[in-house]
Image (tube, rainbow, N blue to C red; front, side, top):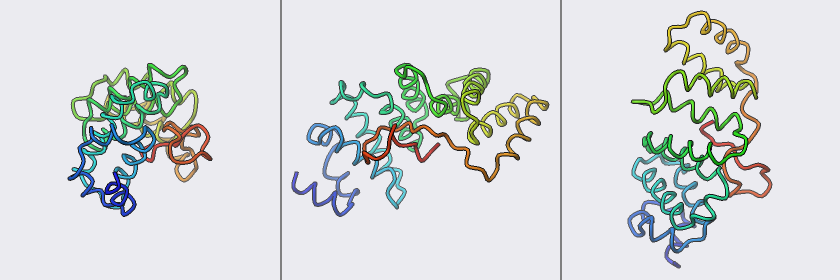
Length: 203
């Protein structure tokens, strides 16, 4: 893997994708190395749909190869779900978030909102009522701008003007304030100084 190390250090992800299959990398990199590579590909300076797909497939192969390690932390499935979102794989996105939800002993607000946000995708896997319930539960735990935007959109889609107007006022009162989720829902794979794991850049 000497060639790979050189390519990784130079951030030459296109050549990595052409040279190594996701399965090959999952089998030859450590659990942490594979996830770090996927992260760096997904959030490199250059957006590329093919690279997003490659990173998503890499995470899926890591999940298979390191099944025990993967299932020990539900945040790995949130990471995968976010990758699927970037790769426009919305059914797989929902499935990953749902696995995380089922594994988490007490789902934090950010995870509830991940599930609820799947309602806004094409051919959503959950109903408006289910998304509403998840979002309100998240907002009961923590008032966040993302949650307010989501619930406001749900009531707009349901043509519930009274509830939309209420949450629209809440939204206007929150604009410009720091009201993002306080709890990270990504695995702590890049910095030991980040307690609780990273908050996804998508949240």
